[in-house]
Image 1 (cartoon, rainbow, N blue to C red):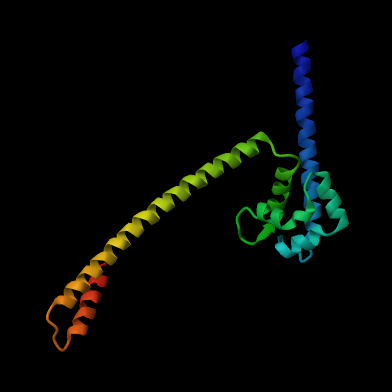
Image 2 (spheres, rainbow, N blue to C red; image 1 turned 45 degrees about the vertical axis):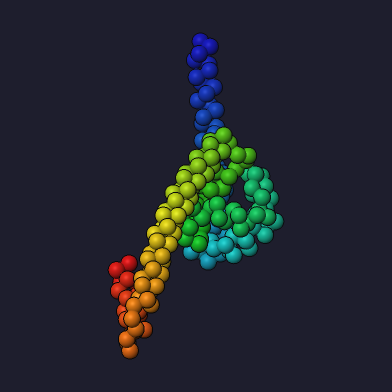
Length: 173
């Protein structure tokens, strides 16, 4: 009997959470529609900044734990596809995700993404070092070839021969 009561309580809690999520999604959709004055289905950064200056919007955002004074940062977080505007779904899902304090999974995701980015940066730096070493080697070779060219007996077209040697070397690079 005790187990059945716990199961029922859990079902009620789950249904309550789903109802709250649905209500919040509806409220955020209404807020977004108010901010989308041109009815384009999206807001630009300036649209969002103007929208977030409204006292009612500020209060609503505070209720869900979002500081409306940081509209630029919020925009960057919500613009998940990086296209320069926030669509309704990005706004709704982003605000719901930003609701309240950071959760452990948020911090774990941030740590994972940071480590992933660090690996990428390290690999890029390694490639740059290899490229730099190759360029240094090529520059040394060109310099050596120029010295050899200058030590050879000069003809009336000596300078053009040096230029041709440099061009040949560059083309083979």
